[in-house]
Image 1 (cartoon, protein in one colour):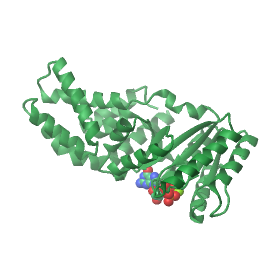
Image 2 (cartoon, rainbow, N blue to C red; image 1 turned 90 degrees about the horizontal axis):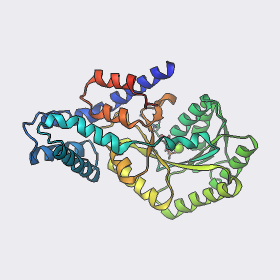
Image 3 (cartoon, helix red, strand yellow; image 1 turned 90 degrees about the vertical axis):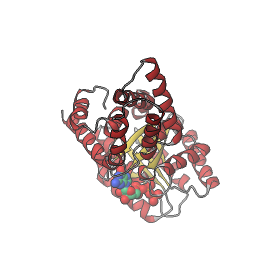
Image 4 (cartoon, rainbow, N blue to C red; image 1 turned 45 degrees about the horizontal axis):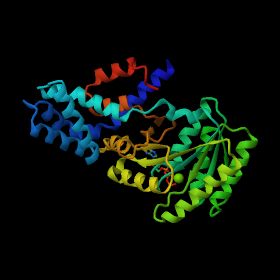
Length: 326
Ligand SMILES: Nc1nc2c(ncn2[C@@H]2O[C@H](COP(=O)(O)OP(=O)(O)OP(=O)(O)O)[C@@H](O)[C@H]2O)c(=O)[nH]1
Ligand SMILES: [Mg+2]
C-alpha cells in the first residue's frame, strides 16, 4: 500500500510537472476536439498541437496516419471521439516490454552516458538508492574524472544512498576506474555496478574510444555481467535531446533512455518522439532532484498525464485501477 501511495504520488507530481506542456496545448486541444467534423483542418490542427508539445514531425505524422486509418475503419464522424483513440495509439506505440528491466535482476554493469548537465550523476544517485532499498548490493564508480567536483558530487549521492563508491583522483584514466570497480564488484559479489561517465560529445572520437575501452574492460574482466547502457537526456531541451540520443546511438550501443527534468517542461511530448524515433525504450523518467523523483517510465500514466482529458479524476482512477503500473 505504501508503494501504491508512492506511485500515486509520483503520478501526481509527474502531472504537475507537465503542467506547462498541458497549458501549452490545452487551448488547441480543446479547439481540435470541439470541431464539428473530421476533415483536413482537423488533422492539421491536431498536427500543430502535437508539434507544439515537441512530439516531433516524424512521430506526429505516424500518429496521425494511424488515426486516419482507424477513423476510416470505424467510420468515426465525431472529432471528440478521436481523443481516446489518439491516447490509445500513442500509448500502444510507447509500450515498454517488461523485459526492459531484466537487467535489474542480473549481475549488471550500468553505463550511464549523456552530455554535460543532463542529470547523469543525479540519476545514478537515485538508482543506487532505489536498488539498495530493494535489497541489492550496489556499487558506484566515478568514471567521470574530468572535474574533482564531479567525483565529490557522486560521493555525496553514494553516501546518501548508503552505497560504496570506487574513485580515483581528478584527471585519472576513466578506464582505470572501471578496471578497479569491476574488480571490486566481483570481489564483493555486487549485483549492480553503476558507472558515471563524462559527457563530452564535442569530441566524438574520444567519446567513442573511451566508451569502447570501458566496454572492453568489462567484457574481458567481467564476462558474466550484463552491460546496460543508459543514455540520460534532459527533457527540457526538446528536440535537442532527440538529436543527442541520435548522435550517441551512432557511436555506441544504447539499451535504454532516461529522460530527466520532466518537472516543469513545456516540451513533454519529447518523450514520445524519443521513444518512437530511436526505437530504444525510455526506461526511467526524472521529475525532480530528490531520490524518489526517478521512476520507471509508464507510457500509460505518461500519456494520461499529458493528454487525458486534463481531467484529474479519471487519471487518478486509472492509476488506482491499473495493474500494469509499476
Ligand atoms: N528539476 C530537475 N532537476 C534535475 C533532474 N535531474 C537532475 N537535475 C538537476 O540537473 C543538474 C545537473 O545534474 P547532474 O546529475 O549533475 O548532471 P550530469 O549529467 O552528471 O552533469 P555533468 O557531470 O556536468 O556532465 C543538477 O542541478 C540536478 O539537480 C530532474 O529530474 N529534475
Ligand atoms: Mg555528473
